[in-house]
Image 1: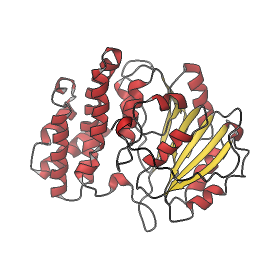
Image 2 (image 1 turned 60 degrees about the vertical axis):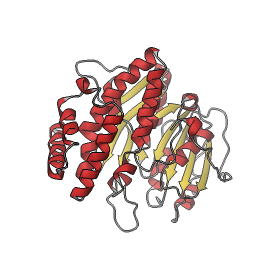
Image 3 (image 1 turned 60 degrees about the horizontal axis):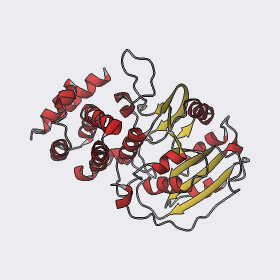
Length: 360
């Protein structure tokens, strides 16, 4: 969904806490939260501990209608450091971080923005080293090293046989999470905003758009920057949406945005169109090798597996997986072939075989 097609954000009156933005403000840390009272303190402590210095950091917490004490805990950090700015806002529950991220995008006063989920946290040097990398390479995006906590880490994969490069390559698409450092002016120039209608994988289209339009992307792979967590669900904890039993059509809705963005870029011609063409094929390899098998293996019954395969096949036919077939790797082709089967066990076994192959 393009920016022009999105409804305006209905913003509630801002309830700012703490000091307002001042000179020397370098990074806005935009934290989105929902019922994270037990964990947001850890997140904010990690921001307060940054070697960059709190006076250069604006904290913008945007809460998605929490019913616990998340907002109260967040406001308690306003006077714990000499922040460059500290604001806490709250809106009605949407079930997605997208509205909060759009608020951060609109409101950030820093030269750079770093999106953070309230249940995650930063390494102490993260903002300092990423900011220096951004300055050194005049980067629109800086990808810091992720550390997985109870989950895998979505780090950029380097091209085989080549040194680290800031030019586009398929390994970028292994890191489509939005928890990165962005130049604020670059973010606001993009022809896409977070789609507030998406309840799953809303990071993907935003990062597809950002990677398409970025002139320079820097990597920080020698410092632990972002600790991305996954809590096991239990009473009182939210269920991670990627594990929820939501319908296949809702789960895959994000792909309409992803391939719409790519199609529009291809239509513009020039170098952007060339990058978009490469990205479409590379993204299909990622979806078929990694994303679809994970979703298939999380489905609890045969009917849900077949429904997901059917929906994935519709997307493949609609958005060029078959026309990109010459660029699909063997494992991706195997999954694509299995999607047309009505045999849940065959679909599931293919997904498991491919996951084992990738993991091995």
